[in-house]
Length: 273
Image (cartoon, rainbow, N blue to C red; front, side):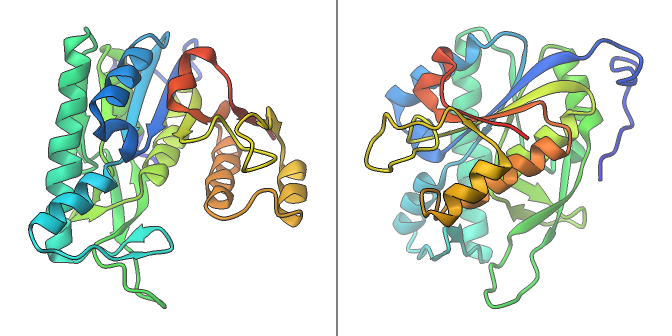
C-alpha cells in the first residue's frame, strides 16, 4: 500500500512526463570494503538521471556482534534478530555503513541522504509472525510512502536506504535489503520509469555456475520456469528472480541482475515479462 500524499513538487504521474530513475541494490560485501565501495560510489555517481541506493551490511553486523559477545544465527540466509542483535544491526546498518556511504557520495558531489524506514515514515512494516522459525524483530513491508521519496528525489537528493523499517508503534525492524529495494522500486514506479538493479558477486544469472561468462542476457517467466526445472537456476537466486518478476508486474520498467563493477558497462541479465 502506497501513501501518495506529496507536496506540489511532485505532480500526479498522469499530469507530467515521467522521468527515469535507477534504483541500485548492493550487498554488504561491496560496501564494507574500502576499494569496492570507492569504485561503486564512483560508478553510481555516473549514472544519468535520478537514482537511489539500497545497501546491506551483514558481514559488519556479524563482526561487531562477535566483538560484543553476541552470537549471530542465520536460517535460510535470514538473520535471527533478537533484542541484542537489533541494537547491533541498527548501529551498523543505520549508522556505520549508511553514513560511510553518504559521506563517500558527498565527497564526490552527490547530495545523498541516509534513511531508515522510520525516517520520514517512508517504509512501515509488521513484525514477522512466528511459524516454524521465530525470526525475532524482522519486518515484512506493509506500506511505502512513495511521495516522500519522490519529493526528495525531485530536489536532487539521492536517498541511501538502510535495511531497517519500523512498525509505527516505536519499534525498528530488521528488513531484507532485497525486499527494501523491491518495495521501494514498486512504489516509486508510480512517479518514475524505474530500473531496478540487483548487484551481487556474479556478472548476471548464469547458465553454468562454474562459468562466470555464461551469463543469460535476457530472462522471461517461461525461461525461468524451464531453468528451474532443469536445476540451472536454484538456491537463493530463485527468490531474487521471483521478486524481480513481481516488481515488473507491479509497474517497474526494467530489472537487471549484474555485478557491481559492471554498472557502467550496462551488462548482466535483463529480466522481462
